[in-house]
Image 1 (cartoon, rainbow, N blue to C red):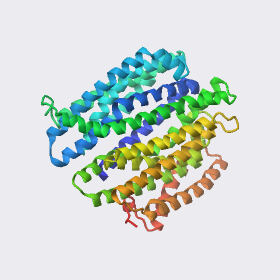
Image 2 (cartoon, helix red, strand yellow):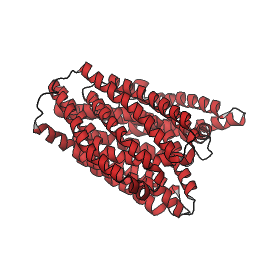
Image 3 (cartoon, rainbow, N blue to C red):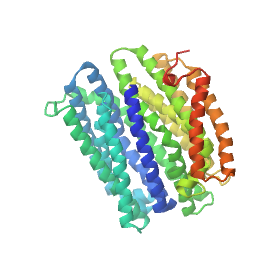
Image 4 (cartoon, rainbow, N blue to C red):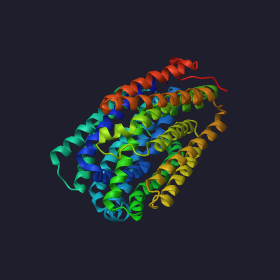
Length: 503
């Protein structure tokens, strides 16, 4: 589990870094208004993916882990092929409806006719992404992390080169044409990923079971896992899409022009939040490894091992997420202005950072519930959390005295609620006890000390005349060393960051 987590963390961090600088270049090339326009079509991508792909990825990961624990390679091949078949069957009617009603969707739902071209071009991208993700999670279920890690790193580079290269060749374009070019670049990188993982799977596992009959019971088992997860993702993404679509419209209602509203939306969702999400590459890696490991533990009735593994994951989440958010609160506004050339990048970073912390806990505990076979509990908790976020947006963002602060407050409250609900469900399922010191006290005190000292150092470096880039690098290096020293002073060695006894 540690090997897989470290490798996926490295690939995730690599992807985050490449993706982060890709976003910087993208924002500079197309501007905040077109960035906001591009952000408008992404909720559609999320909604269609939730219908066709999300549930299948959890199903293939869980069932592959179960068959791997039993040594049944033929079962793994059948699961993969069955899930790919389900993907195509689910996507065809959705794609037909999307193409047929692309005009009203772009005008009346997304609120901007310029999204139509990008909306249609998303469909082949979603198919290829689904093929990639089904095979990627099949590898995760078998405990093979190197093939998907390699594919992920190469994909990030190809995406950046393809999208930015096409924009440089094609600009200047209107907003609709620019968004279409971006999606075409995404399709290019997904062709590479889907083809690469297909070849790697056949080399590692072979084509066993491809022509063998797949029993109806297998489809029922896939449906039992995928249906609640996919339904939850669909409803959650519908609420998230409504949230994203409502924000610019409510800002206009509050007195902003359409251009100002779209620009503000592009800044917070295309600049500030992605900057805060960079450290969550580690959290994503933990979740990917955690689901099949817990599924194997459940299949072998090893509940003690499940508790110990999840306890280490929670400790690692705190020890990585808390100091990263604390550091970004200090240097984030300056870093955002430096990277994005926009004085608004980094605004409201403190409440957003708190929301990201609770979102990280919510994601890890939600992955644990999926691995433990409690997909329905994870589904209900997620829907309730998303509903709270949507309510805050609907009732507060349109108020000119509140504006985007209503959305940020909703993120904070909804992520806290989701994390608590998931924790309660996990504790009820496997009797997991809280590890107060290693989960909260030690990493929290270390992060607080680091933030206070880094704030003083960052201010001093700025007063001394150092430019923002050098000041950020020195402050980050100093903060990392200070945080590790703070953990050592509390009796937690570097080798203990993934551990901790139950209380």
